[in-house]
Length: 438
Image (cartoon, rainbow, N blue to C red; front, side, top):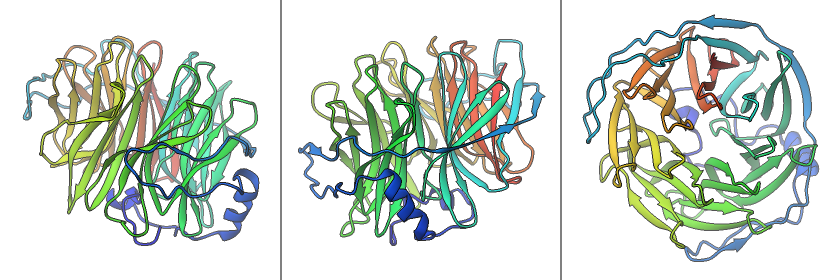
């Protein structure tokens, strides 16, 4: 990726940069043989109004699988902070318990490999079983891994590599419970956006597009099992003028559109689908050391429309978008001062609430079937994993895990009972962990 900066999110979070982009060339060649279509080409057309056909679905690779039996620790869930001020807009928050249900956090080690785990994404199926995609970084390889739990054991499969150190993969499940993953793959001087799925049995990996720089990819799956992806891309000649792109295979072939443009360095995007299957994308710009403003874009009207979420204010890093059953859009993100902010258009216009004040990162949002929000995030000062919810009608927060440097790369999903499931990195012990409220 040359001098292109925005995909290296681990650097921005203070994590060490241990593996270089062009390492392990042999791994790249092997992966290309297994999973990349040799006839796929770069998409050089950057016209904002064009739909570009990219590649057909004809390439596959099968991941390797290992099984890990893990121990479980249980922690109680006392709320640890008062959250009573709304410094931005119209909603007010008061202290309450973080959940009205009796229960406790159950915490497990998913992948105790002794390698660095970097970034994660989680989804929960109809049986309330977790599916996690994450990056495992060894001394010579950086791999995309897929973990599921069965009969008390975690099954971990290698999907692909060599991927970006700081760019977490994104996972989503279709209605049949099959997994779909997108991630960034390094190929020579370009990045390749890879889409992988196990819906046909073995893992099939397809290169969607190739660009000079790709980052912060996010995936959603519609009711027909079609993929919808948001990602930032940049070309060699305009490294600091990146685009936010929307890519989908809903027509049977992969196409892409330009949704918006960034300024200087641009980072952070996320995608969700409404009840009609229309995509909604949150993204922000990065100017100097500040992120923002934050935008919401959708083509629900037939063409892409963009509206600012936080006006001209800084903020929008680590944004995570979710949509409730009434098609109300909500976004969790990190504000300009490192605060955790929740925005929603449920009232017809964007209202914003400061949920937690501090130095935070890796915010991830899920909305349960009752429309309540659940947010996981990392406290970079205390190096703890934290959780916030408005399930009681008021915002409350709690520390989920605080053993060492814990919580980077966290992601959240809720199950059919409305219980949160969180995947996250244990940086101290170099492993991936999983927490669920039971």
